[in-house]
Image (cartoon, rainbow, N blue to C red; front, side):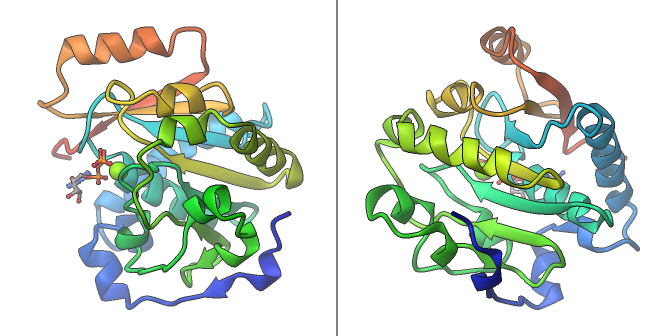
Length: 226
Ligand SMILES: Nc1ncnc2c1ncn2[C@@H]1O[C@H](COP(=O)(O)OP(=O)(O)OP(=O)(O)O)[C@@H](O)[C@H]1O
Ligand SMILES: [Mg+2]
């Protein structure tokens, strides 16, 4: 059971968040509007249909999954009616904690490997209505953890518990590990991030093939000049 009232609040200086490109926090920056467009499209494609668990993935490494997941989560939390849980399911290379300037001593791996209750792992980064379920250590058998009944039950519970909450899952590269493909069966929607002038067409095609029949709600062309 996830108990929000126990969530630790750790506020990080805004300068650090800006340096780490959490642009969606800064309305005055022009790039913030790109994330607002993304958020609006996500709302349009999910709200009416009650889709609330979304995975952010990309064909390969370094294309911008984590930054997109974090900025989208911030934008959704800024909407008056939503609360958001941002969960680091890139079990091999967790990075959301660093993006938010956090150094947790425990993370989601402790839930799976040491039975630590989720309520002890959640962090509120001082951003209204946003909660983070961070990672911290590398999990090398991440695909097995991802495919475990415990993971399936966790996501099922997250999905059912609150209607007005979005859960954004950061995840590993789709073509490099089985993890995101496994996760794609549990979530309501998938967003595929690609990198401008970098993502190769055959990789994009392969990713699209892997996601065929699943609910790909959109793609993001990241790192393009605006
Ligand atoms: N839109 C963007 N504009 C500028 N830099 C970006 C943008 N998106 C991501 N980056 C930078 O690119 C790098 C990779 O981003 P990020 O960590 O979000 O990618 P990732 O796909 O999650 O990587 P990994 O596969 O390692 O998990 C980071 O240094 C990040 O700051
Ligand atoms: Mg990442």
